[in-house]
Length: 94
Image (cartoon, rainbow, N blue to C red):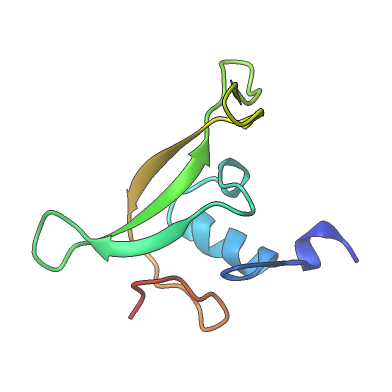
């Protein structure tokens, strides 16, 4: 089985990646075990995607978190432009 045929906690890897791209989020920045949720934005009717993203240097390499010895992460948000498809289950969607 190829890596894109696998599953995440949110659904099939390929479907989650396609949905992230539709919302202008680079799926390679979101760890396979990273958190993803949809929450209200600052304005009425606005919704945002909150997700964990790996931190990269100018050359594209991940920073290492000395506390965990894994890639360093930060929480980010992006405007929800496309609802997740039926096979992508994200907390706070519809």
